[in-house]
Image (cartoon, rainbow, N blue to C red; front, side):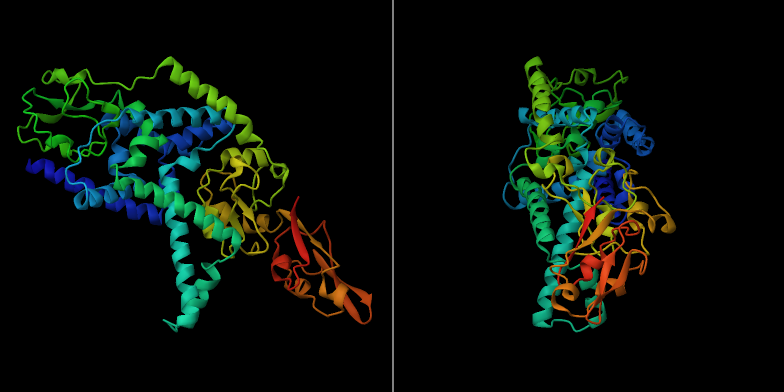
Amino acid sequence: MRNISLFISLRRITQIFFLFLSIGFIRKILYFDPLLSLSLIFSTRNLAKSFFVSLFILIFTIVLGRFFCGWFCPLGTLNQAVSYISKKLFFKRRKELYHPAQKIKYFITIVLLLLAIFRINLAGLFSPVVIFYRGFYLIGRALFSLFIFLNKYLNIFSIDRIFYWLECNIADFSPQSTRLISVVSLGFIMILAFNLFTTRFWCRFLCPLGGFLGVISRKSILHILGKGNCTGCLRCIEFCQGTCNPHLKEKWVKQECLFCMHCLNCPEKNLQLGTRISKAHLQRLNYQKVDFSRREFLYTLGGSVLFYPLLKFGFKRSISLKVIRPPGAIEENDFLNQCIRCQACIKHCPTQFLQPLLFARGISSLFTPYGNGRIGYCKYTCHLCGIVCPTGALKNLTLSQKQKFKIGTAFIDKKRCLVYEKGINCLACYRHCPLQDKAIISVNIGRGLSGPEIVPESCIGCALCENICPAEAIKTKAI
């Protein structure tokens, strides 16, 4: 019993460690998601580099079962923490038993892999690691923005330099960002809120990575074995994280076991860890399998086929709308297949030029990055987006290559321009352009005025002129 308590404490320390590690090194943690890697292989028809890293998770799963879900997954750790607190406060006698609805996550896994085969990669939308990052980053950004907004009026702190930097790099109250933060935050909070009523709700019922690892864990070497002297105290299911029914001889749902090891605190020492080649405790080997009927599988396949046109083409004319992609973006269809919506490029954009796309181009483009000149601009001396991209959807360009990479072209609406329309000598766009006298030139328009003119062949679409224009007379369009 004492050794089991030490293992449980070690698991909790490991969970906390990887939770903070995920916050600081999210790009590296993404490589450990084998479902993301497999979806990339199916959708791009190329061997993903991250697949070799995720092989370690698959090897550990074959040996230990769903070890990743119970020990390393950051979203699973948050779910478990909320579930533990709610159970201690409100549902002290809740028993953790397997529910047939837990099969839903396996169907979600099948749908995502089928769509990836059809070249629609949506695995990043449902990856627990990506969901954790999106929720943590955007909620944190919203709280920082709110704090800065309140500080302007309440003057809580007067450290001007710090708050100026935070305001320039974090605060963003644009309508696009407000909508995005609202949508993502609501979804993230709902995932956590469901844990108030069901322990690890997302992990049990919806997580496709958990379903994928669960299928592999059916053949794992390590088992929870029973001696046959169960007294029916049901202490083993009181804090079971995966609801795998460890108290039942032939109905142990092995693929749901997260190896939280709470069940091993059996007062009769009936349960213990062992391997399938063990000669003792053989009665536990006939565990219950997830039963997929032929009808259920056909429904899943048919649903994937029916939803394919909606996901690929959408029902809006805006699906044909071209958006400005980050520098180094590959061809659009390949970009959608290779981008996992991790938001790493958006997070590292120093001017907030990159924003997540919502439903303007259909579900297949949801949360992919695009450039918004009304909010920010592409900094001429920055190429971080290509460096931080974990999948190669954005090429890792050198600074000189990025400065020549064309992502769009600026256009001037002379009916709104202060120089052409009102005779005001502005030229803010000309003065701030990094390619002055190349991408934008100053021409004499009479009346002692000089007006700006865009040179489309030289303009790279950085949108600095659009962002700086006081009359909003410049619009940057995708090429």
